Length: 280
Image (tube, rainbow, N blue to C red; front, side, top):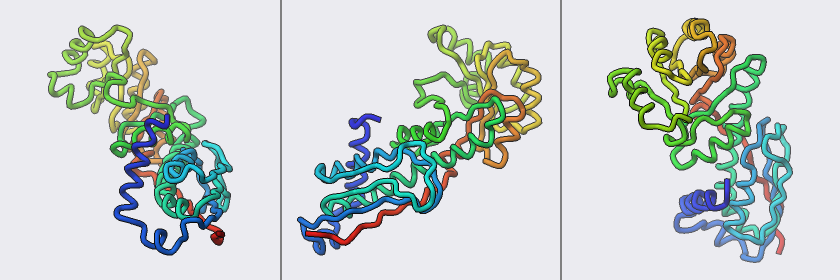
């Protein structure tokens, strides 16, 4: 992400955290007090968006020195130092929670995603991210998922053409919906059709879908769809697919698996910041 995208998020997060003032920091810590601090992984994790640490503290005090000790995608161990800060103690304390919140959340997504990717490594299926993201944090969360090993699906509605269940109902079926799109869109654009029942599979094929999304179908139904399609179009299995189930779904032979769980069910990673004694 570019600074122009990061700065509004960081500014809003700092405004939210500071409110009317940070009383212990503003009253107890002299303005010229300096300290060194370490950001530490408290458990094994996959590092994601570590550059946000630098960006958060630069927004508070651009004289503060930040040395990143790991890069994105690193599998860090418990106790490993992720970054070292050196500068005004007030700046470090005022940015601590915002920097840790961003880092813990995004490392959590990358760690969860990496677990999914490892589960399906012996199959051809590739893991895709989804649009089930926190409002206004989509770029960050999708970046974390990519660092964890997922491929991007569409970033927003304009980045791809997906006929979903409600589109099909409102348009009167798969065929009329796809026909309208084919009349209006560039022929270079691929069209995905989401089906929720196997009896829609042939209609999607006949209508000319480029990719068919199997939404919340069972493993048995997904395997049958793979056999029926015989490679004529790409198949994506989707739904709130749990880590315990993802390998079974990959084994059916689908081309892609997308799961909102890598975002919605990921647990924040445990990271902390430890300051040394302040010096004048």
